[in-house]
Image 1 (cartoon, rainbow, N blue to C red):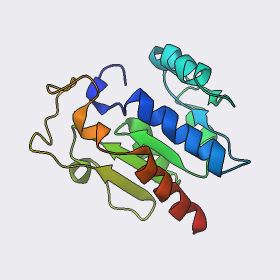
Image 2 (image 1 turned 135 degrees about the vertical axis):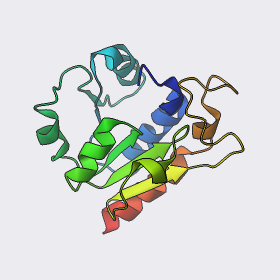
Image 3 (image 1 turned 30 degrees about the vertical axis):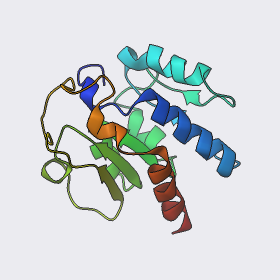
Length: 156
């Protein structure tokens, strides 16, 4: 999210998670989604990895996004409108929450797997973290935790 920087999972965590997926789940592909404003960020992620994830940032529209999401085994996202869309489509969704309260903004579903590390400053609803540049509440959610949940979902 370019408007809510505090909702973004740190770059290093995202890279590490993708590396774990490629190393431990051969045959799985990673696809990056985002609006036009995230195209450059998607290219940075893509250029940092080998194999490269598919970068669809800025290449989907609201009209064709549901069809693209339906092809996924799992969707991993911060608190965004696309999180709600994937849940509505019945796609197993991992939601990474930091500055916003996941239980206030989501509907309970067996397809929604929430990660949220509650801190004294939770839930601040600030577009930028007041504590540090890396969104302190989201730093606490590790790539290993998320990858473990991916494995659990895939076993079902």
